[in-house]
Length: 209
Image 1: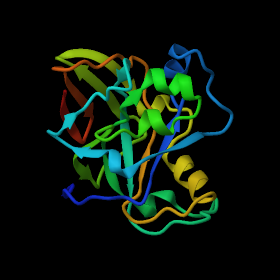
Image 2 (image 1 turned 90 degrees about the horizontal axis):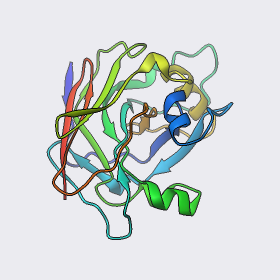
Image 3 (image 1 turned 135 degrees about the vertical axis):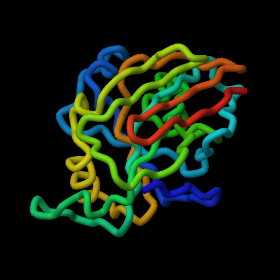
Image 4 (image 1 turned 90 degrees about the vertical axis):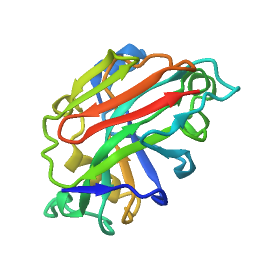
């Protein structure tokens, strides 16, 4: 079932997972960590399908990162090994973890590089019935395929991530977990059209200005 994402969609937090695909970690000169690498993206960065991604004047290297996003349905805290993480999932959607790569490298930590306004396109809707164990994640820029991975390649699976995160911070209804991006990230320029396509969900389209 599809649930439309309302314009007022405002999760209390967006938890992102870095280096969750070995090929993406390698292309940036990193290794997959032993434990999930977590960082937060500001909810104020959210825009929707058809909205514009704005390149800020502070960055000369803004890149796309197409990801499967998990939307939480109910409060989840300290989930044990006996608990079923999928009981806390409302559904799944497409997310573009837009990143100012030059600022990420300069700052070392990720907050500024990930949280400019418009840096979190999400949508086009939430799919409630989807097996995400082996789902295709693709990104096209101006019709050219840039990223092409499958969720089965993730170092840490969706269920593992929900359980892991819930034991550090309470997951509230509407919270979003961005599960990482495959290799192929590239620079976005004004005039580009960026499409994040996830099998079983659809395509998130945004123009760059």
